[in-house]
Length: 295
Image (cartoon, rainbow, N blue to C red; front, side, top):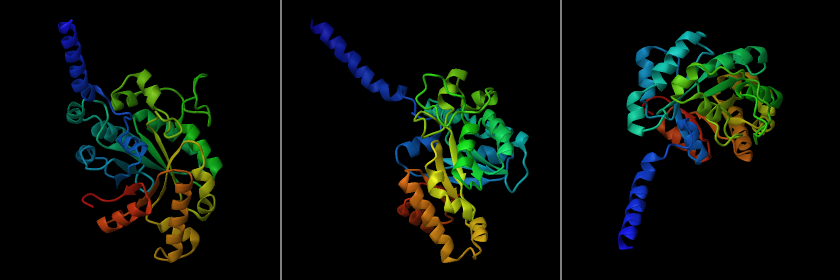
């Protein structure tokens, strides 16, 4: 009897020691992993898809980075190359003992939110390459954002709890399986939009850049499947508002966007180019910061 009790205690002790090592992150997307726990995420932007830069992106002390192809060349071959170079990091896999990359890779593309036909195919190709999030430029209303979320979702199984908005993404994950380091079955489980699907690892990020988008930001934030709302440095928005970028009207617009995010519990993103500004924006409640290396 004593032997059985001792053996049981030994098994329980070994289980307690080994359990943390066997646990995988809830989310393969490191940015979603933090956001899901109420933590802010810090990231960077790049338009350099060279091998050296994409390797460097993989080991930044950031949660995400996004490739800006709105203002740079739309080079999908280079993007696929960068995804492989930045997300397939054997050293990170060995260190973490799971498939979660250190830095999630997102991208921005030329089409605006109103250019739905253009977004349809580019979203599909980008996700099949292995991107973990897409920033949609110039989203003006909830109808546009709903459609963009649909482009990122597969049609749901009949037993799914998360049927709406219905998915329109065609199935052929291809390189995404290699980039994410998981099976097709696991990818189907993770390749949905967070937080609509709590297990999802894709982020659908709306960028508010126009007076129309600002007017409708509350309804945009209420769209199921919106992972974050982002405002850039403010140049586009200030032009649409007809005021200089330094005008108090622009800061008021930022705070209007932030209030809508808070009202709907949606992470709100902003560019902050310095430690002082980063700290200030975090205190205000912004949960997605784009800054520069070393900031």
